[in-house]
Image 1 (cartoon, rainbow, N blue to C red):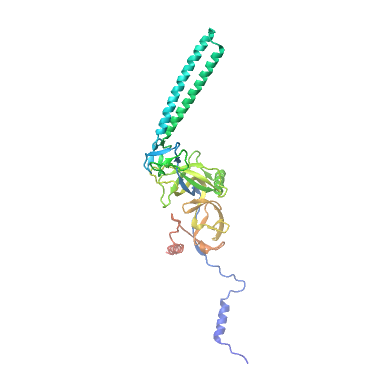
Image 2 (cartoon, rainbow, N blue to C red):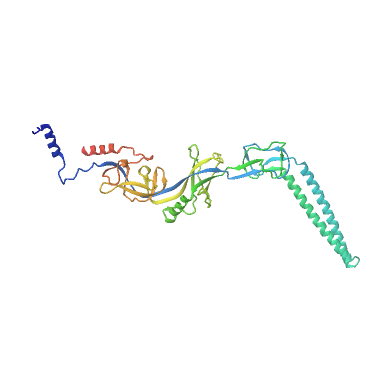
Length: 399
């Protein structure tokens, strides 16, 4: 017994056979993906580096007493500007004045003794010529004169010591700057060279900023200079601009004044010191800042938008280029810092390469693409969607 076939099933089978590709016929090519690109051109690019750091006073002096005594007067206003030599503290100096006067009297006595010894020696030397005194008498008088002169010199030293101690009773500012809080009050007992400072003076105009950089970055920059990729006019300082903690830009430019050629054993970093004018006292010691250091100019470099660069697990940077055959080609590149929203690329691309900046999320190496020229604004954004731009281009061509 034969089963009857339904006409509908037979028709569907014939239609499927008719629509299937014939033996030996290639499958249809996948549709091309529209991508936006920009054309790369080499140019001279300013090379900068961003570092973090802290503000440090240009000079710091901790004020300590050099004699013992009771504080009689505080002669400064806390938190205000003082000049070098200004009186800060006065210590009760009664005993130092008495010691000075005693030393002064002792010197006068020694000078009188010296004068008498000199007279005796001169007289005995004259009498020796007539043999009125013995040679021994002359020698004794000479010894007495030398001893009197030595005592006089010692008395002068004692007087100078007494004068110094009397001067130390008045404590003066060793440097100019802003003085902090006084750690003692009137009536306090202070001691010579005590551990705790009476006050601290910080010179803040000009002022230092200590920046921190890694030794690996230092070696990379040295290699760029050695190879000639990074150049700078000899003898010109390295300008530095600051960004404060609130994100505002410090309005005065500074320059590098010191590079500490010692790398920390635990951190692998070294210190770069910059100096800035600080007339408005905007920079305060201890403040955290960000700095941009102008290292020089890189000739023949390429500015590649950051959005076009991807990095793998190994940290290597790659981009997508449009080949002459209309395919996406993944290319490894070498970056050397940033400039705004762009990577500075020194190797891996050449003049005239078409860099994919939009739509590369949909492609892989070797994908067929339809390139559409795009533009990048200052924020690194493609202002017009590629598909919309391509549609408008096609519409214009049809008209």
